[in-house]
Length: 308
Image 1 (tube, one colour):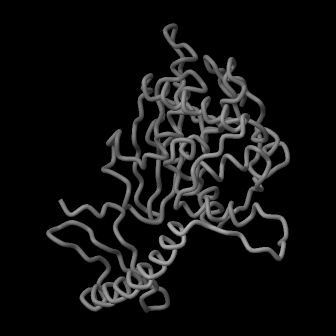
Image 2 (tube, rainbow, N blue to C red):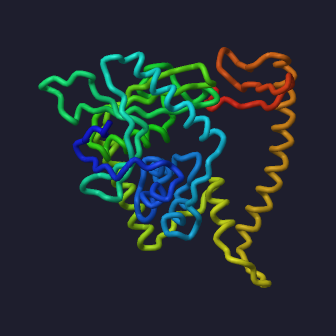
Image 3 (cartoon, rainbow, N blue to C red):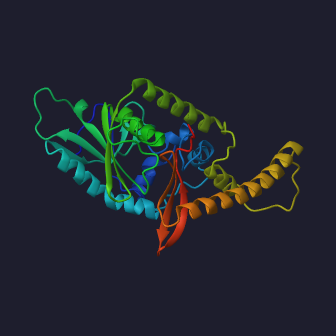
């Protein structure tokens, strides 16, 4: 079935992630829905600096499939089928990679599009909706089923970018948590929010073109990018300022002390949990114990670590 037209989206094709065609659609000065959270400094996977160097071709922008991504892709049709079963009066359509008709640098690849099964005379392409599908190993970070604000902020950035690219006003995020907990979250287009994303994205692309690099931060993607940038090694000494030296040594000492403290806290919490699964304080989740082969594998902290 052909993808439903959208008010402002131009379909580039049905591109499979990891293929050369898909890579080509992401190459160059373009901001995709999966990159916009990094532009905003909100992505857990990409930093502003790492994205900057990738867009400039100075760091690799290769697609590496992880086991989490593999199983997310495997579960995607199942989650889409569940949404379809719950909404028999709608069609769930596979789609592809799109760009904005007036802004070729604004692109997205929504998981599915949704339209009514029977179109009446009042229906327009603007009534098409986005269905974005996620999987998560844990429930932490996800709100109550149906809460419009219940999705992680980086996914909200992604969905808002998709709506703005396509000119649509509604989306649903459907997530399968821990393989059995199915939830959906309705998202409405917010013009002010979309304008902020678009403005930040355009400024970011201008900085990429002009060579204004973002500041170095503590994101792991920043560190991995900085590690990649030098080509080879010269046997020379480089002078650095005393302030950076002192900060570096202090961080090493603090890290060692924190590691020792954290290890003790983990031991104490696991000792209290015993063969249980979760630790709570006054009803609020503190940590979750995972088990493999009958023994503790890890202790995962709650994403919301506020004490209020």
